[in-house]
Length: 376
Image: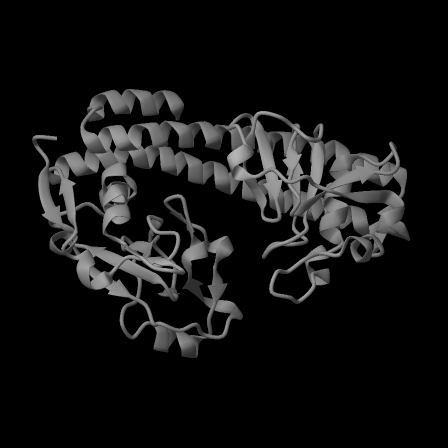
């Protein structure tokens, strides 16, 4: 890293934060960006809420995020960041800040990767304020924090290599979303042809998952499902796949997930046991989505889905021919999505290997380009 220059955050970017309050959420309107919006270097609007136009004016008095701004969390989930995309109207939520790059000094995309790189992540760990309840980046000190950067042309070259991987990840994500929309449309058509209504408990049984503490897990190929979907991995399965998992506790209780292979559902989730061998799991997956289980979640400090109440819900059941026709198409699409998710995982692994090596100078851009091209 002899060609890299040590500078400070304040010398390469302006620092802003949002209002220290939360507006009323709305079903539409400008986006309200919270720490849940940050997802491994990407902005996940699926985890974001909306605000009214009136509140948008109030919440953008300090700053309005624009394309190229680096969004970050300064309380809890420290180290998370994402770039603000083009064409999105949004305001910052509580505990959210942004860095506005001085583009004559730093490339915005490079700044994101430098922020996510191990050197600056270590700086965050060392210089954050560790409180009794939450850890915090002191924004008044952030401008003095050191960061090393190369010349702009090398910044852009590094960002192009890592960005190509991220772009392919994003493309695959959009392909999966399009496939989801198609499946939702097919499911809607199948349920329109329902010939009768039955209790969910006549068709399936929701079985409790089994506790598996993080410290007891051995990273491996088996996905671990909790109340919010996949929460890690393990080397041993509890249930043979494919399977359907329902969130039992937590913010996403009632959510329905699909596992194409063997899996381990922990005790904040249910897994589904089908009562009849004539009812394909692929159909059950969409049937449970149709049941709208999140609406049944109890209103308490820790939201939860009651098993007996869920199994008492009445659901529409088409005849066997309609189910068979739907499942034939659903099975193809779910397998396609699974391949795309596996590709995303491989791309993320390559990116996560290259990121620290490029940021330390261990791997040259030309060598990284060859590795990235092979992955893409």
